[in-house]
Amino acid sequence: MVNELKQRPVGIFDSGIGGLTVAQAIINVLPNERLLYFGDTAHLPYGDKSTAAIQSYAIKICDLLIKQQCKLILIACNSASAAAYELVREYVGSKAKVLNVIDPTVAYIGHTYPGKTIGLIGTKQTVNSNVYKKKIDDLDVKITLKSLATPLLADMIEEGFFNDSISESVIHAYLSNAELNDIEGLILGCTHYPLIKKQIEQFYEGKVDVLDASQIVAAHVKAFLEQHDLAAEKRKGDHQFYVSDFTRSFEESTRIFFKRQVRLKHYPLWE
Ligand code: DGL
Image 1 (cartoon, rainbow, N blue to C red):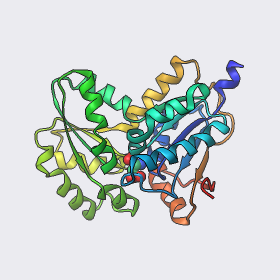
Image 2 (cartoon, rainbow, N blue to C red):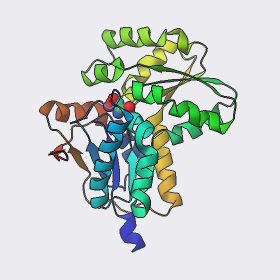
Image 3 (cartoon, protein in one colour):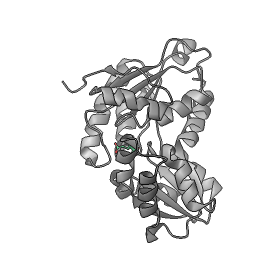
Image 4 (cartoon, rainbow, N blue to C red):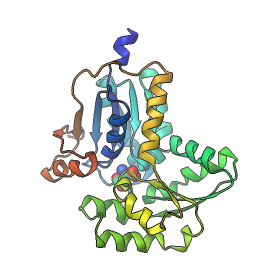
């Protein structure tokens, strides 16, 4: 029975295909795990949606991931982690473990940067929810968090503008905002941002640590599965990638986020 549980897939969901950066990081550290990825492309972007809307999408997606017997559900989207984690955890109960992308990052910041000033960039939903700030304040390690919503960045990356002069200008315009002055580290609080990490590092010329949350989250998922004796011993079956709305362009963009193109299956959860 225990072994059967270990072989079940890890469910990952995101508003679209940006969460594939997290999936990619997980595969790198946990090559034996089989992933079941769900991108809610019918409702993307989550960053501008209300908390209530994101919560209702998240519950429906979790129904599917539970039906597919996922042993763990990772909310691989900052906006959904901010809006729906507590609710999802309660809803899923003992049927699967539930993790989000914010808690591991907050824990990492807490023990690496006590007493320092840290920046956060993300969608409007993530920044305006104040979840990072609340969780960091709860640690009581005297970290000051300065946050800035950077809603253009996700769309920009999805349209293929990264590592070029357009993305450089947009990044420069956002990061020059006085709100982010005097930070020692910057949390990339959106699944898309690992793709512009290098350009952000160039902007700061090495003076600010640029923190790729996908690596931190992947390390946390690995430790969590091992601690709970849930890590798969052998890869059984292929990863599966579902989207709630299929377009060729989504499929082509998987290459950007996953480093190779994957076949997306249309799963019309809302029809
Ligand atoms: N995946 C979302 C996040 O990490 C970004 C894209 C969106 O707004 O849906 O916040």
